Amino acid sequence: MIKLYTITGREVAEWEPSDFDKVRRKGILWVDALDPNAEEVAWLEKNIGFEMPSKEVMGDIEISSKYTEVGDAININMSFVIQQKEEIIVEPVFFFIRERYFVTLRYRDIPAILIFLNRLKTNRAYIQFAESLFAEILSLEVDRIGDRLEIVGKRIRNIWKKIFVEQSEELIKDIAYYDELNITLRESINEKVRILSRFLKSPLINAQTKRELKILLDDLNTLLDYTSFYMEKIDSIQNSLLGLITIRQNEAVKVFTVLATIFLPATLIASIFGMNFENMPELSWKYGYPYSLALMVLVTLALLLWVRRKGWL
Image 1 (cartoon, one colour):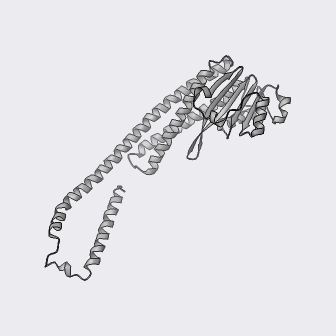
Image 2 (cartoon, rainbow, N blue to C red):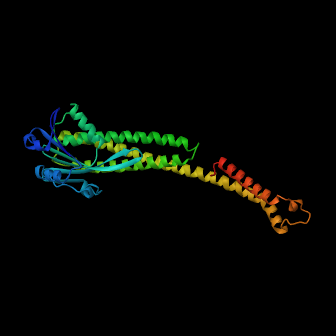
Image 3 (cartoon, rainbow, N blue to C red):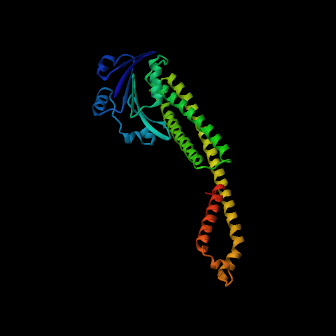
């Protein structure tokens, strides 16, 4: 699906691809391509004048695949982090900037782009240059990353309090999830820092946009420091949790070692003499065998319940 948006200051109008010839010279033209089919790809390449990148190229991590300049055009391939319930998705988005043209190529809804579209349609964004569209979308994504890191920080503090009370499987899953989220956000921030460092050196962008992007770069470096701090905090939590689990295991081993030591002499004597004495009244019990089996089961169950109450199972 392809949508066209013409932008003049705060005025925005939405068009279809069939209106391209009519609107191509009306202010800044934003072409938003969402999961385009073969026909739409051909339309983009013919009318906008850029080569459609493959999904494999969009997923590449090399900086040469993330930022390129060809003549008067800038190609940017940037990843966006999306959370869907318990799943963390890294979704690439391709940006093409050329004079008054701004193209976004994506394969799913990106929250930052949807929020920006809403701002445009409600006249809450003032756009003067094509690259300003990129700066606005990036600014929203940086805000979203900051919000996510704030949540990561709160969850880490809660987990830190809980590990001294419980060491449940759910808690361990929470630690793993927020560790993965923090690392994913850190990788996304690093990517954006590398891209902006290249972008700011470009002679193709204006001074005003450069000032905006420098502020975003400072914000990203600050967020990068937060991810480093959270990585250290999570590592500390994991070490503390491992230490607590080791202590509990040692307590269990100590108890069983003491029990084994207490009963070892009796077991040794019983194994030597065989408990087959002539004057043992239990040998003549009619129900001695089922009684002994029942006693074994009861003792085993009692020990199992005791171990479970201790939290060793």
